[in-house]
Image 1 (cartoon, rainbow, N blue to C red):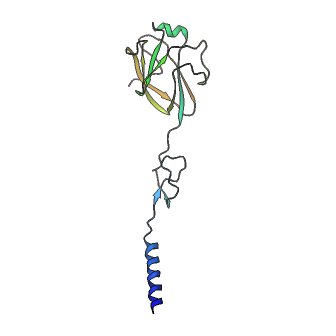
Image 2: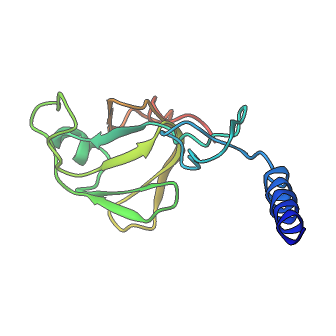
Image 3: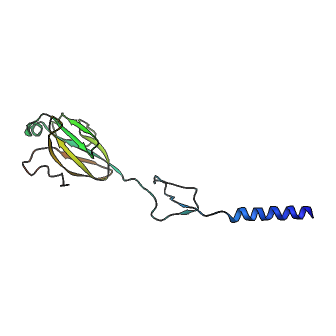
Length: 155
């Protein structure tokens, strides 16, 4: 009798443990930042997949650099701080490999771009620059009159 009671107790204990399992749902995409492979079910639209990064190279040549009346510029992307651009390309770059200055690795999308004069305080222009992911995005910094840089969109 004692064996029967113990057996029943173990059976009901095991049955209770099995029935307490709650199914879990999570992201099953290994590219996601919230990847959860140990969940029972995959969720719909819950995976946080980071945007692809693209290279952005803002460049200038000698004529353009001094065409603004300055010998150097400062560039600020997304308020991350000023980067000095005081060197120039003799010929236009054909890739983002030649890193003279003004190089950024950014997520795909639009970014706030501010261009300052040689003193770092005189704001010459600001707007949005579009970066395509997975590629080199070349943007020439050159004066084109009062209309400003054609690749900068209004904020």
